[in-house]
Length: 164
Image (cartoon, rainbow, N blue to C red; front, top):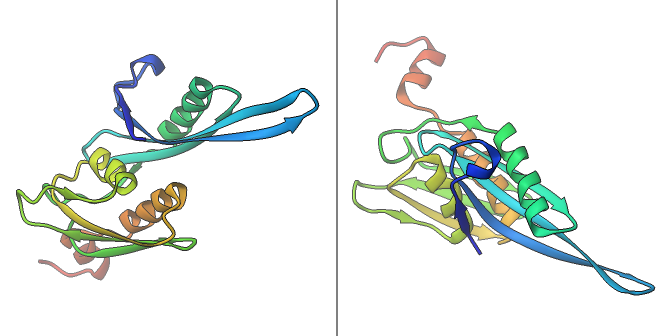
């Protein structure tokens, strides 16, 4: 259910992708009252990416709320050319995501949810594996956990106080 918009309606030029839309029903005296929740990922494809989760009585309002939250939560992560610097595993809840660097020309080998995050992050070549729960919200959070653990050679050298 991934959908990509250019984000023109919100006054920004950062690409966004709707990962999931959930419908919830509340049974009332007159019937069912529906509400919607949207999971949106935004990124500039240059190392900045964020996600948001919005709820509303209609789909467009929930997507708009999620997009605003995603734009506020943009984070910078380490990128090594067209791939990631090293292998890393992220966890959130019962979801585990394994991200592995790949040779140039491999492409993005990932499921729909993880693909949305890594494409908007700016990775062109990566291998991924999802284990455990496949709940899209938890997979996105696990992917962000994995991205937060990425370190370049320069970062590690600076932390250790060593020259490369």
